[in-house]
Image (cartoon, rainbow, N blue to C red; front, side, top):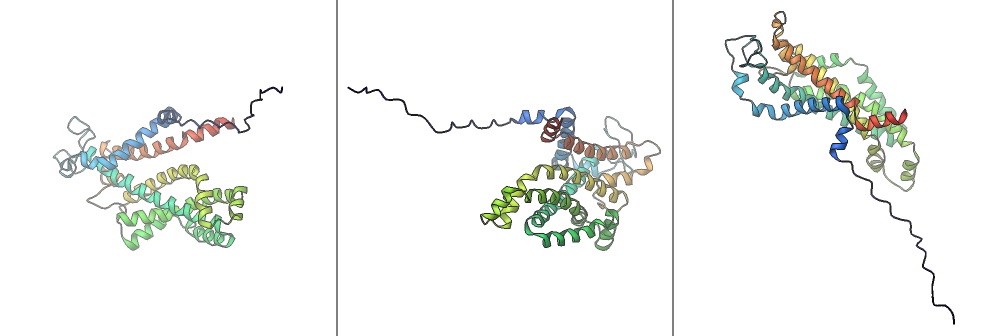
Length: 299
């Protein structure tokens, strides 16, 4: 009689891989380090000030002057007063709406346009690439401040014009960075496979190239933001930026420059606000978790 015992069936299926652990927000923030977190805190403070500050402060504190012109820092005026006796704290908070808001809008427009044109240039072919590159090189040849002065002199100084002018100035830089990344990715094998199976240009741009350049372009967006903040502040200091009765930080420095000899806080405070914003953005960029990990791996 044959034995009824049977050998167990072999399981040839490959074991399922466990899902990749998701990084918690706290662990992601810890990757910034101390200086990165410090910069992130200052940056979030100014973003909240630009978004919520004008509604939290009373309009009378910024609009109405007192008899104390260029008053020093005190309990009544935490950051002193300006040349009309207005509270500098309220003016700086309201000025953040223009300095941060206009610069952020112009940065998103410049980086978005430059990245889109770079993806089109990399995915469409040599003639489109050459045409876009040569056209944007002509803008690069014009000094940024000279171009801004020409635009303001020709079309006037308004918030939409400042946004468009700053965006046009920095589109070529964003295009060159994004194009250098996109061209290298476009030559990789998986992009060639996608073309072979009949995928269109839009699919190549959005699904194959764009996800692989998002990280570097976010870092470049931060640098563009700093450049645009400084450009707009310099235009306002020359009287060609935000016009009264509105005022950004550059306008506040220009209006109160007469108090510089007396060491007035009305000049120092908006200048420190510009410095703190630009430095905080640089600290965040330099301490991005992904960048720090790549540097540790390189060592």
